[in-house]
Image (cartoon, rainbow, N blue to C red):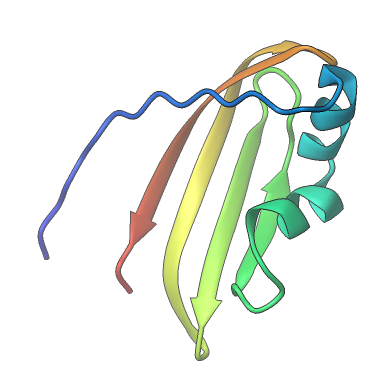
Length: 92
């Protein structure tokens, strides 16, 4: 299996108040609908968006785990800013 590593920095502007976007980002129910469709196979095993918190996600398709992700929250200014890192492993 080939291993690939990359660093990506992404920013995005939303045409909504920051407080509204933030509220949806820290809610597992709305975030799951936002990030993935109902047939994505994506589930949260842990969802802690507080500063120092960790999120873990599994992706299962056809009964087989095809990926997982870990997100660590480094800085949080509620309603305004969330700085985090994300590590994903994919490919079965």
